[in-house]
Image (cartoon, rainbow, N blue to C red; front, side, top):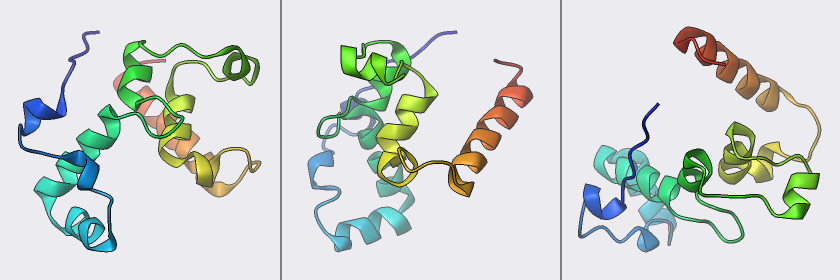
Length: 116
């Protein structure tokens, strides 16, 4: 498998992702404008968030868990990316339908793509 390293500047050299989530107005633009939505998604994928690595760094192997992460079972992969994206809603609260659905979707697409 080959991974492509993509910088947000490759998508749009003038894009300033830092302003994307500043206000509800900007959020509304991201929700309704496909170009802004795509740029926002790429920015979020590529940019570390507070105390979390970027999803991109996790998936390409640039992130290594600290001892506390490893002892909590956090290893590079899909689970850590889910925690980055939706951790506040889905992680550490026990089992619920959102978690079960996400796991089911993941397994279904792995089966479709023939990967494990």
